[in-house]
Amino acid sequence: MTMKIREITAADRAVYLEMSADFYSSPAVLHDIPASYRESAFAQFLKGDLCKCFIFEEDGNVAGYGIICFYYSQEAGGVCVLFDELYIRSQYRSQGFGSQFFAYIFKNFPAPRYLLEVEPENVRARALYEKLGFVPLNYVRMIKE
Image (cartoon, rainbow, N blue to C red; front, side, top):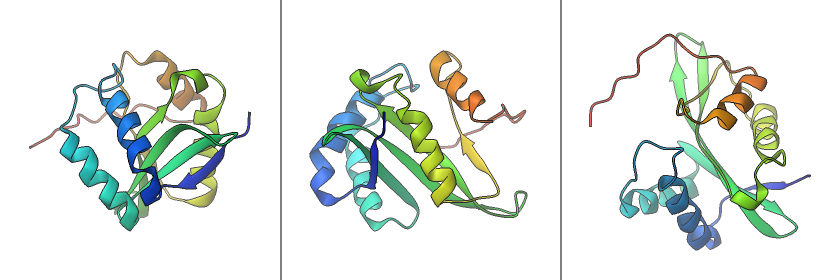
């Protein structure tokens, strides 16, 4: 199956907010976030400098979205890409959309390092990421909010 991948536009606000609410209420994440965070993220995506959101379409229907963010890493030697979120609507899962998104990003946003996070229980996602060459890091992530 071939999907169309395009950058998010202002016209995608409602569908993005709907899909991201579904994503954050799923077992793929540790916890939900306030709706205001998703609204703020949408505004940031329209700027397109720190992060980008891509909409996936199949036959004119929105199938999902993916978010990447950019950061500089001295250790990696340049600007790196963080795969922040990947959401595919249930009826489009297991049809190669995730693989197509990664291929699109690897081709259009070359970087010395690509990073992502995955819940240990998300076996399907982990299998995809390992198939694409991602390996676990021996770092402990820490957070301060």
